Structure formats: C-alpha cells, structure tokens
Length: 639
Image (cartoon, rainbow, N blue to C red; front, side):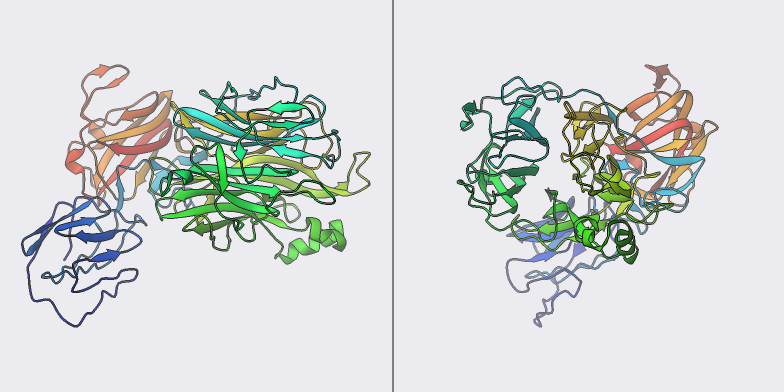
C-alpha cells in the first residue's frame, strides 16, 4: 500500500497471529502481545502509550476503537532521498498495516528546511544532491572577510605586554542567549623567556563577555580568586579539579547540551591538560590528556569522568550534540603516516631520525559517543588528497582540524572550518638559537571550508581557496589563523572568531604584538552560492516535496541582474500560474525575499505578485531559477 501525504489508511481488526513473528526490517523491532509497542529505525520511531500512538517525524497516528487511522502529514527520511521500506505494526487487537515508499518516489523531502548548496559536487560542478542541471552557472565559495579589529584589550599588570605573563591561546567563544563568552588562556611565569617557559609556569583560564562580539568586559560572576607572584586575579574560570599547578591547559570546545539529564551537566567542555615534569612541588591529580568537564553555568566546572576523551587524536577535540543521529560527535586531529610516498619524501628531506617527529600527515577524525565518556575509535573523514599535492612534494597541506557545526535551520548541512597548514620545503632554522634544526616553510595557516550532508562524507569547497584569508603582511593575522568556535548569527551576518599570529608556524621566537583574537563576517547562508553569468544562466532542482506557503530566496543581483522562479511538476512541465512567463523578476540584494508570480504592481523595490504556493505543498515539484548577473545563496519554503 502506498501512502502519500494526506491519505488516510483504515486498518481493520483481523485476528492477531500467535506465532510471535517479528518484523524483519533492518533496524526495526516489535514486541507482540503486549500493551507496549515500539518500532524504531534511524529515520523514525513509533510508540504507543495506552490509546495514544505517536510517530516521530511530523506524522500522527490515532487509535479509534478497533481501527487504526493513519494521517500522514509529512514524512521525512534521514537520507532525504528516494527510499523504500516496509513498516509493520503489531498491536493487541490490531494485526498490521504496511507502508511502502516515500511521499513520492525519487523526490527529496525538503519540508520547510533551508536549502544550501553544499555538495557533493558532480563533475560539472553542480550540487549533485539538490541540482538536476545548470547552464552558465558556477558554484562559488564566498570568503568570510576579517574585520581587522584586535578584540581583546589588556588593562591589568598580568596582561600580555607585562613581564612575567604571556597570552597562550584565544580559547573558545560560546554564545549563551545574547551574550558571547570567551574562555582564553594565559601563561603566568616566574620569569618570561622567549624560547621556553620557566619551570614555575602556570596556565590560567580567564573569562570575558561581550554583547556585540567586539567590545569585551570582565564580568563579576563570583569566580574563585587566585594569587601568583603577588598578583591577584578574580576573573578565572573555576575548574575545581584543576586548581593545582598545570603548565599547559587548552580548552578545545564548550557547548550547551540539550539532552543533559541534570542541571550540573548543562554545559560540557573538552580540554587538554599537561601536568608538570621534574621536581615540581605542586602537581595536579589528572595525568596528561584530554578530559570532559561539566558545569551548571559554564563557569564552575567538574570532571565528567577521569577517563580520557577519544583514542588516537593528538590535538583538537571538538564535540557537540547531533540530534540528527542522537549522539555526541567529535572531530579531532589524527597523525598518520601510511603513504609510502610521504615516507620516502620525509626520509629524503629530514632523515630517518626526524621521521618520528615530523613525518606525519594531519587528518581529521570523527568519533561518536552516547554518554560523553566512552568514545568510538576515530575514523578519518577529511584528509589531504592528490589535488593538495599537485605540482609539489607530498604533504603540502595538513589539517589541524577545526570546529564543525550542523547549520541551524537545516536537517543535513554540516560545515567545517579547517585550519590548513601549508608547507612543502625543509630548510635549516634561520633563528640564531635554532641550533640548525630543520623547519617547514612557508609554514602558513589559513582557514578552508568543507561541507557535508551527514557529517561523515565531506566535500572541499569549490576552488579550495581560503575561506578566511591571511591578512596583509604585518597585520596580526598575516601568518597563521586558527578557529575553535563555530560561527554564530548576528543579525543577517555570521561571525567567526579566530586566533591569529603575524609569525609563521616555523618561527618560535616571540614578536611584540604578534598575535591577537579577531573576527570575520559572512553573509547569512553565504558559504557557497550558485552564480549566474552576466549573460544569463539557469538552474533546475531535482524533484522536491515541501511544506509551507511561500518560497523565500537569499539572493543578490547586480543592478542589471534578475532572478525568476518557475515551478514545474515532477516531469519538468510548468505548472499553471507558476510558469516562467508569469514569474516576477527580482532585482537587488535580499537576505530573504519571496518569489512571486503575476505581479502588476511594482512597490517597495519589487513586483507585488502572488506568493502563495500552499496548493503545491506535499506534491513533487521542481524549481527552475532563471538568472542574470545573480548570486543565489539559499532558498526555503516557509509558512
């Protein structure tokens, strides 16, 4: 039986079988002859509580006497593609009904989710998931631009610039409500050294806040006070398991956990610590490694477990809760050396004795967890490839990992900001105190963009150009840029916070004002756009099934540019009232503008035509965009 949206299926009450057969569908189970029934899959779950039946996924099941009535309002699959399955419900007094197929075979159920162009990329450059065809249109990655401000101001004696203290790391920026929180790190030393810390070095974690992401202030949250060399600090985050002496502490990520079962675990944090070596008088109780911490407020922290996070990852560890799969997911840096070409190259360039230190390829690994304590072994999901090594020696680019987020308003769009380390030549360290050691050049680091629809299969952005580009020579972001925090929305922009250096990765000497915390901005949804030529272009989507009453575009045209939207049926035939000849032209730069048809009045910069597409909801349609000198960033059906 094929059930389409809006259909009602009546299931009569035949005798229930007694053989206890269970549904054989993969990932689905049923319990027979009881008052509780559950059938689950990766895409949906059915449950019964008394006379109430529910199906996750915008479906409604009603039980009426001895009859089941199924009202299929909207059903969305995890894969969002053509999908065949059979679901068998076994209930007391109700034997079964069978449902086969998606709302329309071959159509993508986009619901009211925002649609971005994120790949995978076909050989002709189109988004193979979303786009059927395009002509004179190119998928273009759009750069986020650094605004140039150095965000952190230092007005206390222990701040960088004063003898005995150095800013170690920008830490992590978390947005809570309308407030940005920055957790950064400072190294406090008995005696500052350009080439190595004093044995008494201690790392602290100050905390500052901002409403606009530009002006930062020290709050007064009652944080614990701490004294060092006669100086008192009262803005430190309290990690009560880390009040002892640690010469290295790095916060990799902090997030708010919507699944936390107790208030004390509302915030979760991943950090790396390194205890002192030698004959240090004070020691911490945790050995070197990455650990998970929990907090009720993001300020006062306790260890979640003494078990270390992850397995093989050696550096960054960026976890978050992914409600699409119902698990914690983390991305980390993995060092590998499994390519014979790389082994041969590094033997030649660095010598066999250096291979263990330098001969590795930095890749991005993915790990999952059900409880934020026990993590699966990392699997490599992003790695440099032959394009990165073209016309150069192996290992031209390494990835230092970077933050990953599932983009808000979408079901299957994941964004990764990768810190890409470029190097391909070995040479003696020119620093007078370098002792002739070999270094990598040019040793620059910028940010590249990668996208995915499942968080596992990743696609580098078209062109592989920098997503956040190094600044002009001499600026604090001209040598290296690193990101830890996901992007956050501010009005109609996305803001990216980054730590940056004017030196490169091979220069270990310290330079005055060499580093800082900056930010970059990007248009909302503006990661990758479908760009039409000045002489016009066309893009047609694959069949879609949507919910909503309007179609909104995020689009920018030139003064002489336009975009029109034709709605076709599944076969490509224009639908009456929504054909190209009736489509209103849109000209201008809009974060959100409704498509319209049949407009006769031009007002407020656009035609005031019919915007109601609710009559087409739930049936398969195609969108045909006819554009000229236009950038189409995203589209979305809304109520």
